[in-house]
Length: 168
Image (cartoon, rainbow, N blue to C red; front, top):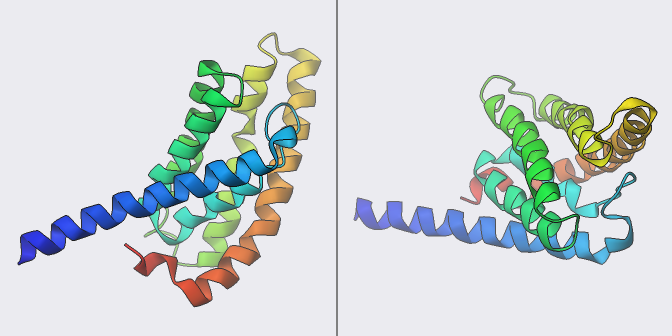
């Protein structure tokens, strides 16, 4: 009996991550003209906050970023750099889940992690550095911060009804 419950839990985790990945892809493709490049307003970035509530959902978000960047972004290089930026940010948030009890604090930290690590994407877009790097970083960080800051209270409110942490 216990083996069946464990197996069902793994199937549920994989299924939920597949749903999150599909949502990420759908939302990013929906706003495709502003999904890539030095100014990015991806509605799908709001899904990054799911990890605040349930760190097992990290893999669906990461998969969505890698697949979108590879096929609709700038190819393998974008998939690598975007995947690395997402993995670092989500990883930091996941590590803090038990150390920082306040959901509001974790939402704020997650927003800051994603904003700060946009330097990785700016580096990819302007490998020669200089003013191009700082200009790209400023626009990327601002667009990421705005998206994540608007999404944080929305995800907090949605969690009150959906209870993301109990879904896996």
